[in-house]
Image (cartoon, rainbow, N blue to C red; front, side):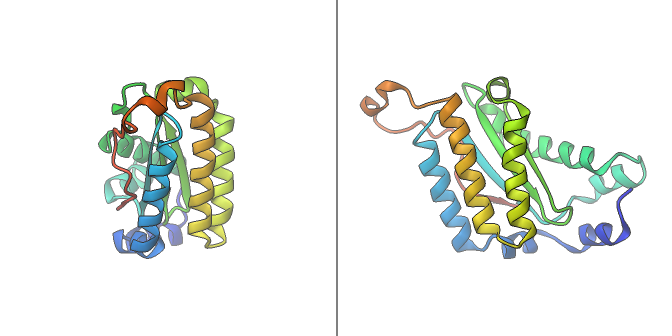
Length: 180
């Protein structure tokens, strides 16, 4: 069961807290890094920072007694669908989801990517990001996590050899950081 102080964090924090953690200048830098990343491989990356879980998700945890990690995973999967990360042609999108109130990170790779990059590779990215976020180093943590995700995408979905002949990379999803 969620500790009462952590529950209060979910009731207290909101989108404004996500915007304070990722101010506009940082959001712009991260969007630029996502665009640069996607120019180096065929995958798609979405970053999402959420202040707290919606009440309906807290209800699942408190009343239905679902474990918090399961509730957070369900929220990340819902955002994965809502943000249409699953809607890439090669099923090679990835969502990096942060929940500030829960101090939780979920990385959700699409099917095509999950088949090639096993869970331990994503867990390593999560651990690095968790360490930086725990120390309050959001920009460093998100930048490094994006670099690690980029490396995995370059490894498993490299840019094709004829990429230099193509006009521009096919950007299937927005690069902007989602703050909610």
